[in-house]
Every structure is written in structure tokens, then in C-alpha cells.
Amino acid sequence: MSTSSVRAIGRVSPTERDPAWLSRLFWACAGLAVLAPALVATEFKPWLLFEPDSLRVSGQFVADFFPPKIEPAFLALVARETWRTVAIATAGLALGLLIAIPLTLLSTSVLSVSSITGRMKTGPLVVRQIMRAILIVLRSVPELVWALVFVRVVGLGPTAGVLAIALTYGGMLGKVYSEILESDDRHAAQSLLRNGAGRLATLFYGALPQSAAELTSYSVYRWECAIRSSAVLGFVGAGGLGQQMDNSMKMFNGSEVATILMAFIVLVAISDWVSARLRRVIG
Amino acid sequence: MRVALEGVTVRHPAASSRSGPALGPLSLTMEPGEQIAVVGPSGAGKTTLLHALACALQPAAGQVQFDEIDPWRLSTRRLHQQRAHLFLAPQVPPLPPRQRVVTAVLAAMLPQWSLVTSLKSLLYPADIPAARLALAQFDVADKLWDRVDRLSGGERQRVALSRTALTSARLWLVDEPLSSLDPTRALQAVDALTRLARERGATLVVALHQIDVAKRFPRVLGLREGQLQFDVPGVDLSAERLRALYAQHEDELLSTGYPTRLPEPEAAPALSRR
Image: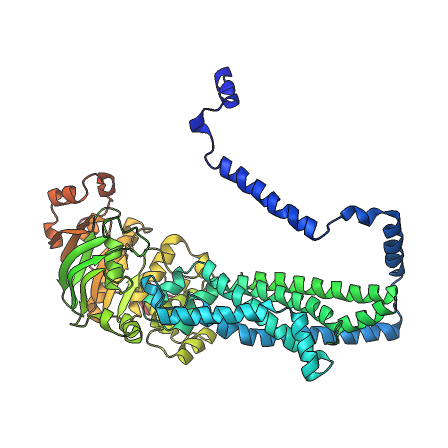
């Protein structure tokens, strides 16, 4: 490199400047300006964690975890509750799919016949917006609230958990499914529609083969989330590992909590493995 | 199918209102069974014309008529039924990468199939011999069970063209079918396409960049900036006409190495290739 070009880097002429630089700088500062009040509002003071008093309390709590309780009777109980948790998550997700799939088909623009020619017609557009509104309502109510509602209706037990997961997850899955279908390459689906194929046939021959891997891995991830959700729901009496954890926490029995947490870790690891395998098979 | 365009002007939905129409005004008729090549430099409106004919773009002005029927006056449902009579093969093969070739080819029959048949065919391909025969027309029968993402670009293009052998459409609109084929393959493909269209009595409209291939067609439309420059038999495609059509785009007019005279059509490859 010659000396003149080295000097040129030091004093960049206006035409050589990245035109996007100023706006990038502005938005970075704007982001910080928005974040700062949020930290104040949440009383975010991480240094409190490291004060001697807090360290002693949290240290004691964590120390209680060891050794995890491994009595056969308790392990059998955890196994039974783990199975119930898996059942709640799976049944909840399956019901959620029953809600999500029809709503996806009605709300995604990929399968819209009228949008072949550019803009969707008013009728289908209204239907689509209504379906999206339903999805928004379903997922904006936290599953904990749904669970509290259903515990009143159907009583304590797993049924309330299943229904709560089904409604919230139906809303989430429906939204994300239709976004996956819309963000993937539409060429194949569009081409089938343009040649006069039906909407459902287009889904199975064009849109699904295009997006199958993404849809599967997202569904398996949601199953993992449903397992965690069912733990939280257990705290309000919806059964499963969560209810057991609630009992152990209330008794300050750290070793039981540790065993139950390990069961969760195993479940999440399994779902991770299943997702990877499925992706490899489909992808 | 008899096709008539009257003063058709097409704008792209996303184009700004200041820019001129992508196509037209354009008036022409196509008789049933005609074979027409559309040539012109990039951006001349070839694809737009095919999309207008496929009812994929609604004309801003003028009328498209299929057998005296204006499809845009039909209800959305009837219009969609009408689309089953139109076959548009886009320039980029519309094949999902994870699909098997057999499924991708049989997808051409979806407009004729009931939903139950389509779903059953996903479990077990409904008409394997038909799919193999269709692929054989374009010399890719050995790829029947392969996945689309295992194919080369040229193979994908030929698999996409094989769909024409299975469609029941009466108007075939094929957009640059030769873009990723070598000269020999390209000739075979055009040959198969014209032969199939003739056998089915379908009207064939092909957008082409290869002038030498276009010269074989009984009728050639020259498009430039959305306007029809000429409408002549392929044999009358003179050098002056082409120079005028491709002015400022001469680089697209380079000789492509295709022989002007095509070999005699061969018999279709036998079914028992494999």
C-alpha cells in the first residue's frame, strides 16, 4: 500500500463516507434512550445480588439442593409426575394444533386464490383479519390466567392445564405457522395456485414441502415450552411436576426441588434431541 | 382454446404509477393449437404477457378473452376453475427442494384431481407410469424417485417442463424453458414441448431468448418496451427486424450456437428406459 492511500484512509472524502452511518448511530442512541427508563422502571440493580446478606440467603437455598433426593419412593413419584407433565404438554399441544391449523390456513396469504393477481379481495382480507384477531386474543391471555379460569370451571387437576396450554399455544402456533409459510419461498405454491390447483392441494404439494423442516422444529420447540408451561401451571393446581415442585418449595425441601429440576432438564434435552433428529430426517 | 387480446395494458401491482405500463396496449389473437414464440430483450414484457395470458395479472385496460369468455368477469371461483385450462411454467422451476420428483411432476394433475386423490397420491403416487412417461419426454425418467434438491439446474428445468405432459390445460405458457440447458438439451426440450402441444391440441406460447430456436416457430412475436414490434412467421425473422428489436441490447442477440435447422423429431424415448 502506498503512503498516499494510507493518508486517504485517515481523511476520508465526503463521497467515500458510508451514507447509512449517521442514521445507524442515531438509532443506536435512540435504542439506549428507550432502554434506560425500562431499567429504572424495573428497579434493575444487579449489584444487590452480591451483597453479603443476599449471598448468604441464596447460598443456603442452593446448598439445600445437595444432595438431590434419590429415595426410590420419591423417584417413583417424580417419574409418575414427569409422565403426567409430558401428557399435559402433549395433549395441550395436540389440542393447540387443532386450533392453530385451521386458523393458519384461513389467515395465511400464501394460499389465497385472490392474491394471485396482486392484492387480496376485500372479503378474504376481512376473514384473514378476523382470524388474526382471534389468534391475538388467544395468545395474549397468559396460560396462567387461562389455567386459573379453568381450575374454577373443571376443578383442580391436569384438565385445566391441558385446556390452558391448548388455547395459548393454539394462538402462538397459528401466528408463527402462517409467518413461516409466508416468509419461505412461495414460488412453488404460487405456481400451483396459478395453474388452478385447490388451496388444500397447494398446501400439501407446494407450501408444506417447502416449509416442513421449519414447521416441525418450531412445533417441537413449542412442545418443550409446553413442558415448562405445565410446570408453572402446576403451581396453580393444574397437576404434574409443577404441583410437586410447588409442594417441595413450600416445605423448603431443596433436595426434592433439585431432583424435580433434573427431571425437567432431562425432558428438555430429550426434546432437543428429537428436534435435531426430525430436522435431519425431513431436511 | 382461442385467445383474443384487445387493447390490453398491464401494469405491475408494485410498479409506481409514474412509470409506463409493462405491456401494451396490445391486440392479437391466437388460434387453437397455434405455436408461438415471444422474443425481445430483457424487460420487454415477455413474462408480463405470459402472466396476463395466465390470468395471473389483471389488465389495467383492455380485454383478454378465452373462447369469447372474459375471465375477469367471472366469479373468483369460476376464474380459478378457468385457471385449470391454463398452464404457466415459470422461468425458475417451481419445485420445492425437499419434494420427490415423482410428486413434483404429478402435481400438474392437481387441478383435475379431487382433494382425496391428491392426498392419497402423497401416500402412494397415483400414476407412476404417467409420471415416468412424462419425465421420459424430457429425458429425465431416471430421476423419478430422486429428491428435487439432488438435481442439477438443467434437470430441474426439464422436470418442471415434464409437467406439461400431464396437464389438461389447453393453453401452455412457458417462460424461457431453455435458460439452464445446453444447446443439445435445449433442442430436445423444445422439440418435446412442441410435439406434446401438437398431440394434445394445446396452444403453445413460449418466451425465448434463443433466436435460432424461435426461428423454428410458425409464428414469432417481437416485444420491445411492452409494444408488439412484429408478428411474423419464424422463417421471416430477418436480421434487420432483430437488430431493430434488440437495439441497445445487442449483447443479448449473440449467436447462441444453436443450429438454425433442427433435427427431425425423434420418437419419444421408450417407457422401458429403466
